[in-house]
Image (cartoon, rainbow, N blue to C red; front, side, top):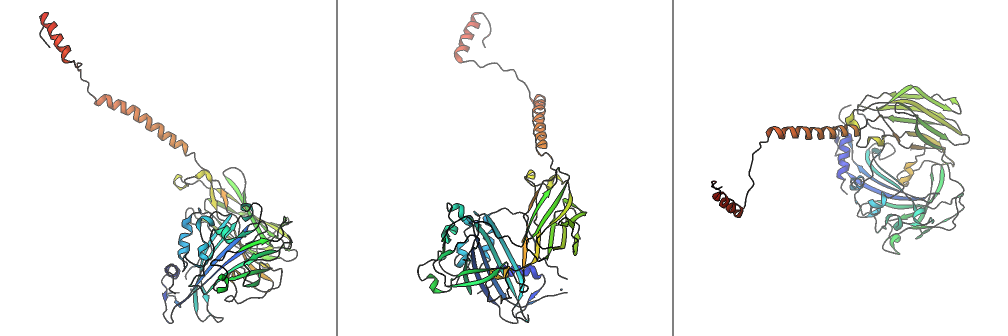
Length: 476
């Protein structure tokens, strides 16, 4: 199949002056999958992944002086269907066939959680990395509040969530799978029943926990043998309230403290809930320039004691040019809570730099945490080409740990904001005074006055002339 035009554009932007080598013919491949995971709260998580791989040799001109962006975050973006439209245009089948038919904007944006991502990177074609391909991966994750909309029931189906069903696989896809997490929840002591019966099952280790998935191969004709469409349904055989939730070994919160509009403090709380294993965490903070950090106030405490980072890198901000960049490698002891805090001062912006709604506040991008988290069960590295796409979201470094990248919640910070209503009132009052005073004065200077007699009718004039003639007065 032909390479998507957007992929060519992305490659051109990344390569700059690099050229394409035509030593071997280009070959594309597409893999798509959907992972449905029932959550303990009764919600349902749906994760779409579409991977387009373009086999083409790339040659770089010039010196390895190129700078590449590792990762970035947006503090806030308005939810709009236009965010999904260009994202779907990168898919070879668009939204006509395959899993992409479920991407209905009004259903996806009416969810409890929504996240989109686009990743493009070079990948090796073999173990010796003698040739390189380019991979475009599109990820979409949404969380449906199925428990509330289902009137207290946790049962759900594809049509109930997306208001659509899967009719066929994308004809350009080499692999198209739907995975449903049917692992038994030991805390709720319930089992799940999925229909229609899956074609096979798959076991994987996700976040250090062993999970079982029902697999539906859309390229297998037996999947659509019973009907013209695939409408997965999942039911709980036993309903009861959960006694608790599984807490991950690594999680974090972030908040801003202080009072007034001059100073404040940014705090990030890191939790390591593992009972006996410690592990390091790479913390990345990106703070806008209008929050002027006091780097000497940086404190890291664990269990009431100072925790010195083994690595720290700080790049100060420049007003209206670049934000603060703070990166640290922190060791988290077992079963501990670590607090990272730093004080800042709020800057006074120019009146043209305020947003249309300045009293709403300004968003600060979340912190980024990268760590190798211990596993609950022993695992082994798998062949990524034969494994599902969701396995690469939690890559395994060895048999005892897996890589995790977390993002904390964004912050909303208030800045010193002038009273924009006062200039408006002054402008209105000034315009009114000028219009009344100047208008009246100008009218008096330029207007001329003429004395005009009132017009009389013919009858009145005829009678007046008769009277004047009798009195000997000239007629009118």
